[in-house]
Length: 311
Image (cartoon, rainbow, N blue to C red; front, top):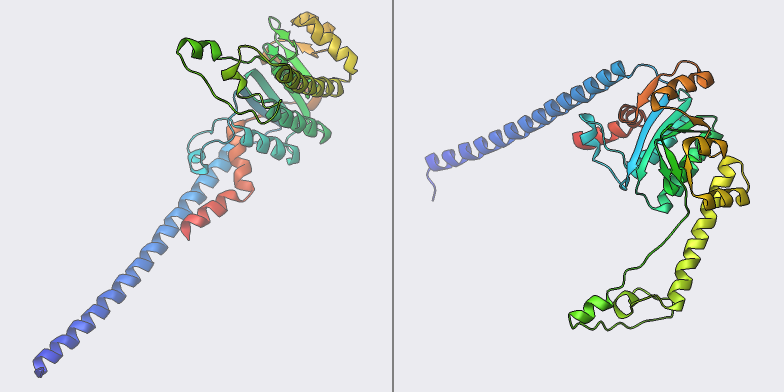
């Protein structure tokens, strides 16, 4: 049987536990409200600072080179540094520019692209959509191969450097065969071929292409080549025969490319704003990183992202 003193101590202990648990819960809620307020203040301040430095603009400037990876950095990283250009960011920027009434022109500097043809065709269509929306699309090339020129051809004005050239020479494909090396190592590859056009295993079992393998590869090249010729012909207002003839000629120096109608201007990059002024008046440039942050905020993504952290 418990004494009165013991019962009183247990009662006080239960009361103290309830008191401290309630106090801890209230303190936790107060801390959460404080953190939410601080984060809201930070995001609000960043937004005000960004808007203060935005200024006015009418021309979006983009630099395209390299492989253009599928995705870029996380949204959080773009708060303190400009993101590197990636394919999805580029497609989004071009779409935002198409819908932005303040953007009157998009100027792209294109060099040394290492991009697959599917992505190039998507970018080609995006540039054509900008033109259809009434935007001026200018592309500057220091030089260009088939990839660079195919993309540039979608612009209404292509500017080539005076010392530059175009090497629009068409398409080619090659296949590596490892059977000879494997034979020297005493290795024999055993491959089960499901059909005559399933040629992936031939690299390890043959020293040259089989007939079906060559037929398949040539068919793919012919189809892609036809799409490239058609895209350039439509964008540059030429016939397919004219484009094929120009590709057969191969290398063009700057003045030769201008005479052939492959480019519209031969000049240096710093002359592009002056040339563009004749079309849109004073050129006010916004760089890709700043324009991306502005468009990201205005689309509501920053608020949704902040809300996910606050809740």
